[in-house]
Length: 538
Ligand SMILES: [Cu+2]
Image 1 (tube, rainbow, N blue to C red):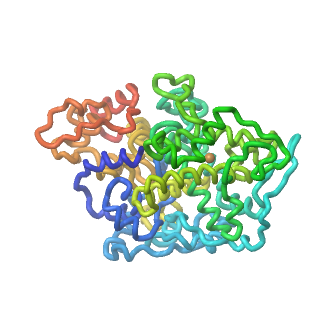
Image 2 (spheres, helix red, strand yellow; image 1 turned 180 degrees about the vertical axis):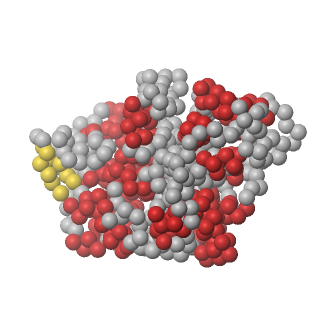
Image 3 (tube, helix red, strand yellow; image 1 turned 90 degrees about the horizontal axis):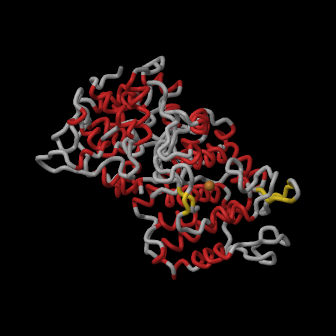
């Protein structure tokens, strides 16, 4: 799980640029909390703050091709922030959300639950996330009924048109699609730990402003993220349309037969396999089956799907234990040719039954949590939902590849003026590796262990500055020693050589990334060669 990964890494935190840390902390409040930093107070403050361009579980958003990002903005805004401390957190200017268009209007009314940061102007407005939306005025005009459309040979049930309008304004379908796409990166390339080079599907995703998620579908951590992201969407909808929250409530029990009163398409037949049925029985009696799921992540993975692309079987999926009920539920009511076909990831959130089945999954998860004595007050839980919120925000096409302060107002505020595209070996060869493998935890928004190794919102020049000649947490090794990879902590961690390296004091010997899916031999060579040849930008 990423949270655990971050906890592990957090032990290694080193004292670094205090002011910058503070600025980023304020931006990322709870994001940092996830990585084990005094989260009690931070996440307790207010549920929401975060920057849009930050990909929660990391890497889902293309790093900025150019400068002018967080670093610069942070510097320009840092004075006020440092002085004002937490009181610097103020509501953003509603309507200033760049590119919001119609969403700006509804957003003004509908996003009162969020707070932004005293960065001023568009940068502040960009820096928000919606956890608790307030009702949309259209809630009053809604009917409680789903919309029936004729599609292909049958009928399908869609969310009401006004809800669809709201979804369009918030690029809901696109961000949901993107969320899954970045986690199916390896599947698309039929290769574990796939890079875009030589993989056309990855190239296409890059073209959409997406980058590979560090935790791929089915990997440890993905099950929990899967449940949390869909919960985030459900919560958003229920808070936006509270009078019609029932539209987004799940099956109480998954309908088993045509005549089941919960069959969303009454009169149409339903068929499940015996394995499906077994899965329903287990999950609908989750309190009696806790032992089968040691943690929430296991539960999520059991439900989501059974395919696994592993390092040992990169070209074909292996079947992991699990029910795969999520896919079976989607397939059961899928209508060919429907504009919101339930098995079409790019549009399925507009299907009424999507919310029935995901609501059911969400209820199972909630019952599991209750039975385990887990509460919503836990910082890790808050963090989890916050991360999903931030990632979904960042995955809206209008936000992809954007960084706070990188817009027109942002660069103006930063005083940087024109944005200079970066070039050089580090930027083009090394940075992408750091972005995909390290920035999930070590980003500008969530610099676990004080390390910013990439991710959105930081220039390559800044990443370099933060690494080369800088002390690692144990104080014995520098992060990067120009010309000597064998003494460069980042390399030792990435290569796993940390396991045997000489340490005089405390030595955190875990290799990175903690997911266990490390850098490929080619990536390690790139990193090594770059260090050996001087670790410069060129
Ligand atoms: Cu989904």
